[in-house]
Length: 150
Image (cartoon, rainbow, N blue to C red):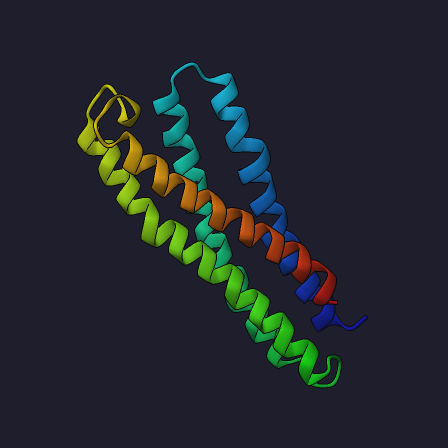
């Protein structure tokens, strides 16, 4: 395995590993351990912010490394990997930079009682559901990318 292939594997591991760890271990643990759901949501939101920037950095690095793989990967393999990277990045950009600000606005407008005690509860729930769905899609694309990136 070449140095470039090892770097690709490293970036995929960092990206998908952090995605799965934050989304499926850390965030649920926060909500189960902290009695203050607003605090748990605030901490989780900050972690998802970090994850969004990790996603951006890893996507750019992987796209660059794929361009160096002209001899190692067939054009079809490079194309499939790039589509998966772009799909994962799109999920992150839409979820964090698109939906998250809307959810933050609803939380801030709700006041100290929290969004779940406000009139915006349903709207927040819909946005959160869409965001969670995008995160799941990104996670599944990440699993696929792990098997494709070699």
